Length: 435
Image (cartoon, rainbow, N blue to C red; front, side):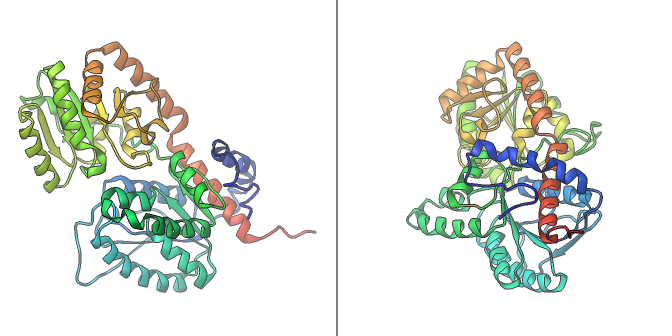
């Protein structure tokens, strides 16, 4: 099946896949002024809007579609703040009994919400008669069913391998992995286009037999296009904490789910502190239960005076928070997808240390960040080495910032979204009449 002027063919070599959008540029530039206002049913089975990975990515995509002039009907969970964008209508399911506190990843609360979302999606699809369905996470299976019922194509926004994610979180279901992969592969093959957010997921989509693939990487959340560059007056001042006043600050930002590697981080920091007693660790984010559990772990490791947990902080404060650190860390141990925070870290002007795993190395290499094996001793020793080398940290930070500006700007993200949906619109409209 062709997409616009060029086929995003998943059978070709993977390193050519991101170049497919370049072949569409001339066609989309010519049509951008005359072809707009597709009707899109956007399925987002998570709380929206909340300041965490997937909802942030969804908001960026909604913004790009709004700027293209499309009419987007977003169906999502009850929790979250409304977002005001031209052409966007937010519809929320209303389950009873109500559920709150839906966390990232697979959970029974999510499954419960998905049941209500499925019923509402069928009703909405019949009412609005969408041109295309955009499905995130497990809603791809719902989109697959709607495609058969209503003959509507769908785009699969692939931000993780669901079978990998479930097995990582619940190892006891490993015997059912092949069945889950067959189910996931069926949905991937049914999608008009699969939009993975990194090369590793593009490889997974290719193995599943996706017809069309377009890699759409995340972007930095810093800069004028994603928020106000002025430092908020109420931002947390880390150095005002007496535990941090004279130390070198290692900073982690994000949720505290097991796949993020917080256990590794604490054990590695223990080693780093042995080598550099001035080292201090600040952990930003996490629900109260996780903060409490990891605070206890820090006490067990004898680090209660060296580790500070702040809880969540607003995304609008991110730039000012990162600038207060001497080193940023991403200790992620599971998953193929690249954490969104990595793009922001690399854009911050502060050096970054990451686990030496594809989740990170598909974005940056040793020219841009410190990389260490995902084990406490090597990760901690590299942490201490970076804290002790100001010149190396400055060089890494400068190279990383240049990488983000060249390859991961919002403008690049928006252009690829517009190319994808412009080509879909042209295909659905059919061939131009001949004179």
